[in-house]
Image 1 (cartoon, one colour):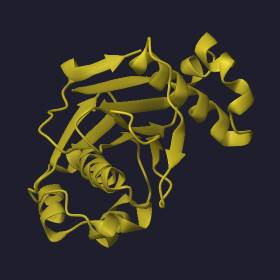
Image 2 (cartoon, one colour):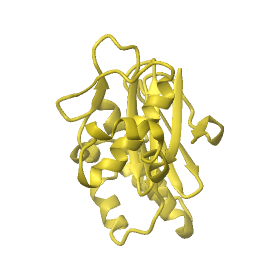
Image 3 (cartoon, rainbow, N blue to C red):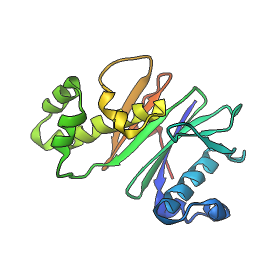
Length: 193
């Protein structure tokens, strides 16, 4: 089972579920994304409570041992995504498709030859969206592994492997998932809160 939830940080962090968690939330810029993420988890697992969350060596959150679910959260701007699974470790990434002055230099630095070929096949007006499509796939793979952002250069999102990688553009959002068993991300699979 895979469940993909999408929401707005501003809405979810003001939810009554979030107010119950306010004492545990970090202060500063991470507070509202943290509250929104915990609210998404609470909704996805309802009526069961959210189990204790621990962090791996690279900082990937997970439920305590013996809990039958794996999850990954990602946020960009005011948008947040949660991928929940009972199939094994998962990764997800969300990015607002936006201009970025150095996107071509960044692609040159971290994209594989095959990813560059994919990018070059796009019409000029579609290249920015293609950049974010490839970027989110790479991030989802790294996050599934529990790696850190600096490992993105070692990932080729075009290679087929034992993992399933899927992408969808939802409005101005680029969304990608990496799962241990086949799961196709499509607009109908998104649960928008």
